Image (cartoon, rainbow, N blue to C red; front, top):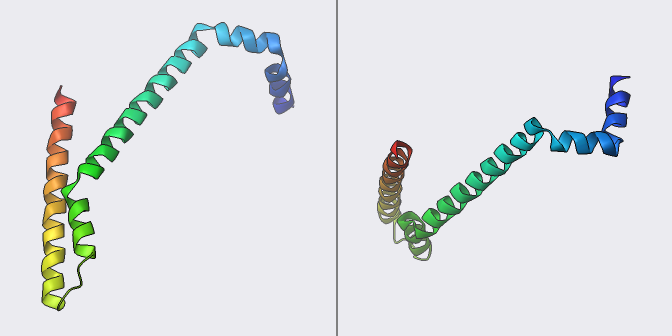
Length: 101
């Protein structure tokens, strides 16, 4: 019964227009738009960092080479891991600095 009542209210154009003009609904729309915009900016920044990433370049370079033996492969993986860890640390520091601003 409640679902039917809500459906009839939502389908009523006059009720929808009144709700859209109300301050709480407008404010909710503003907050939603702000959150979406911030998420898009953060996603764009993260994708740019990944594309500039030294780890990504290093993985591409290493993937193109054929390893001579297991020791050489181990060394390559260690270098990639070290680069990745350093980039994560730098990203963490950058994030901390941005939060402090």
